[in-house]
Length: 192
Image (cartoon, rainbow, N blue to C red):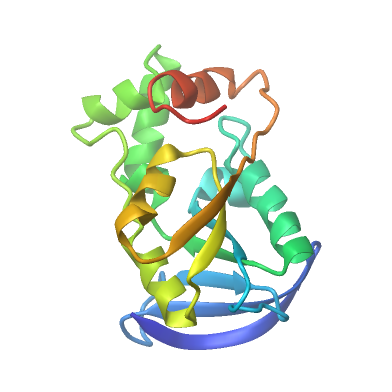
């Protein structure tokens, strides 16, 4: 996976250098890096690894806290001159179609974990290898990781990239995402 294209993108949180990373230039769904223009890789870098959530990130779905976490992360990354890596692994790695099927199962009483396993998937099928590849490409060695997910922190144990600190990113529960957040905390061990 290499850098395919890059451009300066103004956002409500400030300007970011957006770079598409993929195996080839024809990739339709590349992983994306948003980096502060004044990123200094020689310092400890604030990093958010965010897995795509089309429903929450784009349309503001209230079933999850993904869009809110993305926006808060963009704010932190802008303030701290860090990076956000946007991984194309929708629905904890099961894809949008299966995610919508899982939503229907959740409406019938299952939680997100049970819905995914009922559909034949792991509880969480995501991989963070692409994020590691991007960080290595940039030469980043020490990070402050913006996450509530212990698996993301554990992932870096054997990578050569040192997690200096975990930065929590806790959003308020709402009527529609209360069970989603409870499941992340109780069944997936997220620090909430």
